[in-house]
Length: 134
Ligand code: ATP
Image (tube, rainbow, N blue to C red):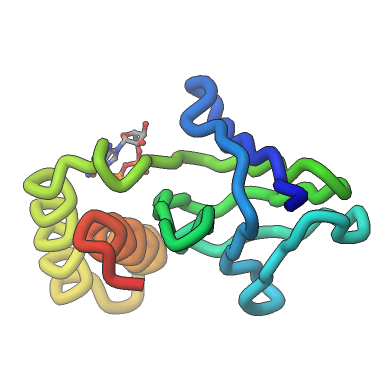
């Protein structure tokens, strides 16, 4: 069976490389499911999980936005940050979630509100990916 080569890259370097049957990602336009042979395209990503399916196994990678580029045999994800599920520091993510929630309660009509909302989304995404909740 044909497979897709997946590379997930951040400004700090490569985070993940594997061959998989299917890639699912949360694009800004909605959930995308990419199979081998997909037409070339580029899509902006939301904060979310990349799901990498191989046989009965599904691996999760948390990404904090970026772009997904599809070629028929290759998917490249350029992300602002990305972590494999097993590399996520759960205590750090929980602390970031609490910090963001506190800031959201303190700040109402401020530009920091958007920053705190994004920080909260990143933290919740990392917690969900760590706990395999997708
Ligand atoms: P924090 O407030 O904990 O730094 P953040 O959402 O502001 O969280 P980012 O700016 O998205 O962090 O990421 C900075 C770097 O730290 C990236 O390399 C990212 O992969 C890594 N990182 C952030 N949170 C975690 C985590 N919980 N576990 C592992 N790596 C993390």
